[in-house]
Length: 147
Image 1 (cartoon, helix red, strand yellow):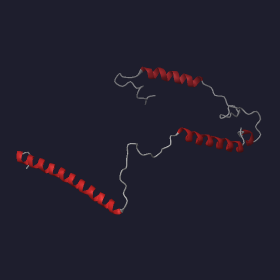
Image 2 (tube, helix red, strand yellow; image 1 turned 90 degrees about the vertical axis):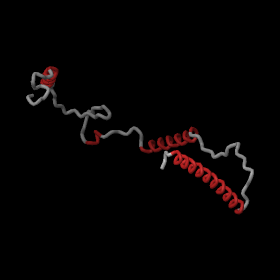
Image 3 (cartoon, rainbow, N blue to C red; image 1 turned 135 degrees about the horizontal axis):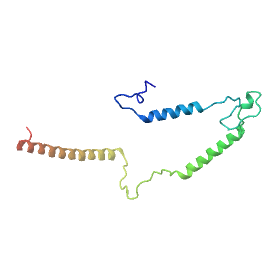
């Protein structure tokens, strides 16, 4: 009690609720009586066995035999698979309707020529962007913003 920081009267500060609660709890502890009994209680089934002769009397009984459990599991798995098949949308690969392919590549030369033309177009676009960047940088240097 003396080591309780709430109970100590330090500089006229203390918590009076602690004293009241402590007296209530100590009174409850003194009034509570526990009686020893030799009754075995099974908390899982909420049953109190009448006659216990050996450990097998305390063993839990299985409602369903193991074979029935395997059949039930197989039925549940079939049901789950059926539900997954019915409820999950199937992903189909389709082409957009507005996509029209006019030209088919027939040989390697066409593929090579088309890739070269594509490379030329991308190179010209890159050169145009580079020219824009250099012109912006030269204008900034002329204005005196950049050195």
